[in-house]
Length: 266
Ligand SMILES: Cc1cc2nc3c(=O)[nH]c(=O)nc-3n(C[C@H](O)[C@H](O)[C@H](O)COP(=O)(O)OP(=O)(O)OC[C@H]3O[C@@H](n4cnc5c(N)ncnc54)[C@H](O)[C@@H]3O)c2cc1C
Image 1 (cartoon, helix red, strand yellow):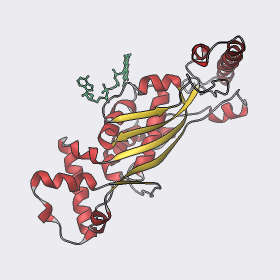
Image 2 (cartoon, protein in one colour; image 1 turned 30 degrees about the horizontal axis):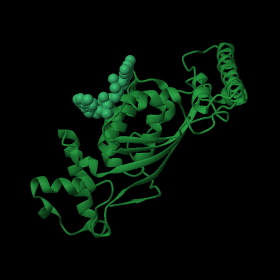
Image 3 (spheres, rainbow, N blue to C red; image 1 turned 180 degrees about the horizontal axis):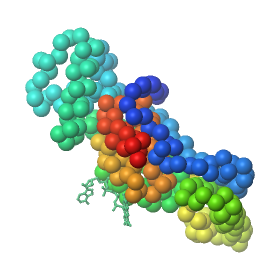
Image 4 (tube, rainbow, N blue to C red; image 1 turned 120 degrees about the vertical axis):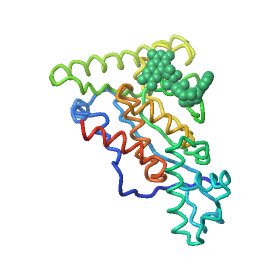
């Protein structure tokens, strides 16, 4: 196996539509208000598992690598026709069947790596509760100076009065400014970084690399794309889904259809 950079386009299915998932009606307002150190989220896939050249020649792709491995279970390699295109379709069918019956261990064949920017410390606290098949490299605020911190502002999509939203955002902004001022004062008085950082509000932004196998991602989507999930983690999960759909659509198409198909009907 090797990791490669890059992405492909997908063309069918109920595509992830962030605005449907998390309506962000005040995004332009946040920009127009020029809020103190405001940052918006960004998700980039930076690596993923690729089959070896030998398998690629046979038509196996990242999307169908799990199905290829599952053929050991049924000794069904003889189903292949030796036509890479046909065999790829055969493996897509098998992938759908594996997912339907809950035979999902083969999905662990695929590992993704993402760079994720502009999500809050509060999101980190929820997200890092997941343990199985996932991992992170997070910026350390013990060692990195926090005086340059940026902030993730709330979307307040449930409020329709623009004046109220402006007032709320200004409260969040004052909080952020005060935190940076107090952090700097503490540092000037001799506090270590690790003691000074403790006055930071949970909306400060932090960047990371995130590692997950495809099976663990499906579980994460199940919990974090759900309506009851918190809006920020839901928005980020939608962005991750957009990314993986470019590479492994067969593995995540049912999640797209269930999530976005339902939202369209509502
Ligand atoms: C909407 C929502 C609200 C939440 N609210 C709260 C809250 O108020 N307070 C709070 O503390 N947490 C809360 N959580 C966090 C939640 O309890 C989980 O800790 C978190 O979602 C991680 O999920 P997971 O355990 O499935 O982890 P994963 O690591 O993703 O686990 C994958 C699967 O492995 C199995 N597994 C993992 N660990 C174990 C284990 N130790 N023993 C047996 N089986 C295991 C389970 O089948 C699990 O589903 C909330 C989560 C959601 C989605």
